[in-house]
Image (cartoon, rainbow, N blue to C red; front, side, top):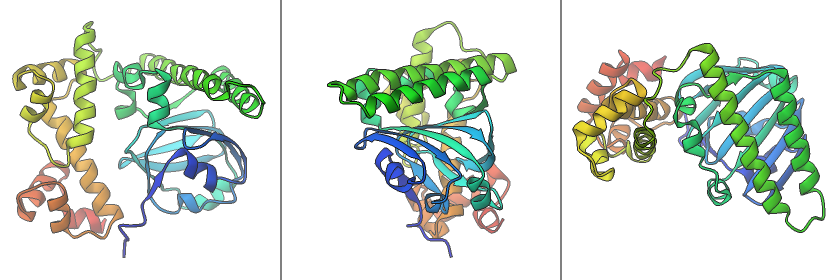
Length: 308
């Protein structure tokens, strides 16, 4: 039987306390940078975990498969994955303990408050390509990997020093690291021609789309009408729908429904909540309505999906 309490909520300090086999540097719950080789303490990965911070993972050797928001990815040598707050991760490799014991990863986890106070506009950096929604895992070059490694070396040196402004210095480096991440994702998507649709040359539209996605991410469990989000953004539903379609190539209802289905799948797969409880949690009028919605989106009933 699945246990709804099995899901672990990940913050920088939790990562620091659970990943003890490698080299870690951290400042409270602001951030942790952890270099892990041949992981021998893997209890953190035995169940799905929800990331309550900004987290980047890049792989130096080995390979591990994981599910991020119900999509499957393989993180192998030279791969970089960036995960935003609220996302759910589950390791899916059949022999995941052995795979982790043979792999090397670097984890960079930064709290939402720390990012906000650093002055880094994280969401805007990635909004043009929507990378964190569509392409959270990419291949980076050897030179890019070396540059990231140099940044991490510098973080270790400063954190372990007796300098007066350690927190402020590391904050500036972290900002640089995430700007590098944004550059890598943008270059990768351009080279691979994987952008859904090139955003129009209209920064106001891009900002509105980014604000819309954040609102949907925070409110989709209770609000599924475009009008709610349009009101929050002080525009008409018709105008919001036009902007969302122009920027992303998808309609506003498609984005809302996508987030709802993502939450529903997670609860069906990783909790012991009944279908009725899930329908209530997602603010559907009744279980029947939720089941019809779920089947229209996935081709399966909630019970059929849970039994897969």
